[in-house]
Length: 273
Image: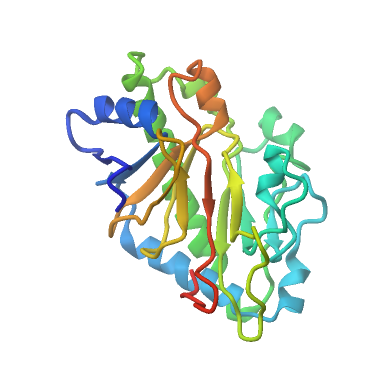
């Protein structure tokens, strides 16, 4: 684990104070005792690994029908996250992804119903017997991480000197999304071109991101010194970073930190992650 990213034990009494310090100085933290069962994570990894192992022409059947619907499969090279910073000349990013939102919501809720074709569009599930475990594994993971995200907003409120439930009525219809990213330089693939990243530099636009990441190099963040720093998570820890919305809500007391994922060195293929 990078020494730059503080480790916060969510069961410790000083968790709110440590969260405030991390959010003010780095915008990233590593959380332990987060309550996510390791078995749920392993099932998610196996099921999504089976998906990404399929031939591209099969995976392309499960792409989103429209760009504004953040669901289904996204192929490598179809996105460039640094475009969000105005860098329209950057090469496309070297990741593929699979996205889901809530798999169900209360019947008749007017907020969900009004956005059922956009923010709360139905998930896109592959209809392959070999991928039968994908839906239950991802829904179980989604349920646990969604609960953790809303738990974190209570910690955030306490860290800001507010009532624990301050964010409850501001996030009761939040557009929660899981994106599983897969990075791999396959056999026969060329090395990245100059300046090409596995995921281009960007900030997240929402409230909070919870990240499960492999214990391999790649993720980098901009530290308080303005330089890029490697971040490799500790075993069993989850990384948490803030988004632009929470930075705005706190009048930039807290940071939405620029981050990216860099490819392995040229001629070093590195592990699939």
